[in-house]
Image (cartoon, rainbow, N blue to C red; front, side, top):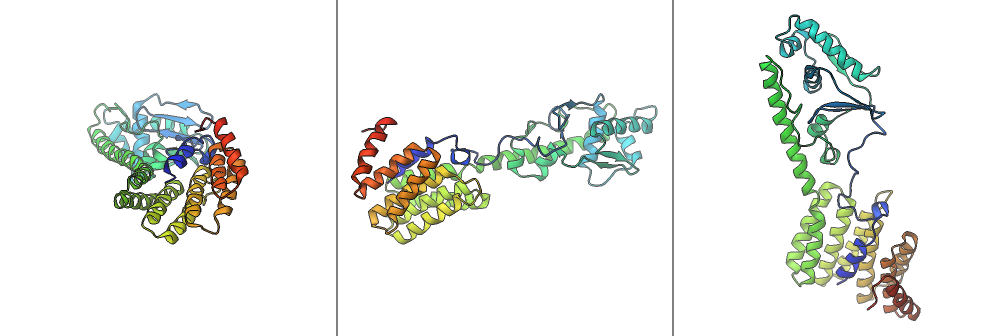
Length: 342
């Protein structure tokens, strides 16, 4: 079993983009600053952030309510509907509505628009609205939102606006359910990684059936998520299970597939490619595979390009096991340098 050695170097090679171990393995915290014109945050304390980073806050809470209603309504509402919904106690509800629309118009800038009857809201190109991301986007888009888990227009009340309060409560419940689903999916998305590791641990303890079950679940979930890292990790484990079952041909096929999966992006997971290569070399030596020396050389070149010293050490150890005395001497020196001698 190459698990302890291979996993050790996989965890010891951070800082290489995808080649470093990133538990989320996906996107950096929510940041659309390079592609958006404005960000509208309606979850928690509302605010509008322009591309420059300046935060705009309405002077009136009802303007936030008006903006949220326009964004979340299925169809453009009539002015009379908005006036009675948000400004029922005003001396002149229609005039109060015009003032609120003007405040929204100023916040959106020249690229946005809000006008007409019914009122049509046109957000600037590239605008991002957090509650829309939560309701309609993926967990990968939503998980880094600053207001994820907070109420829609948190703490907001509209004096005398019972109808709006009813609408807001319904929307808050909808957004809360979507937020809960996002967080649930986020944590489920991590499962293939610990499942794959636990599967290899069980295999190391001679629990082949238990390992196979865990790794099959990990692989299936990774494929549903479309994550090259998780797919490659689980496929590597399944290859070890196949070898333990005596199906070496399938084991080598799975390892080749694992490398293809983890390398299908332009910026591949180099540490995982090395981890899978380590298993290829290990199995190749045990079963006399004709390509073992090619794999060792590929592993060595990868280590040289990326500076992964433990990967280099493993390639030297494989070379030494294949009869290269020079590799054995070099492995001893390198192991002493990186504190792994003995």
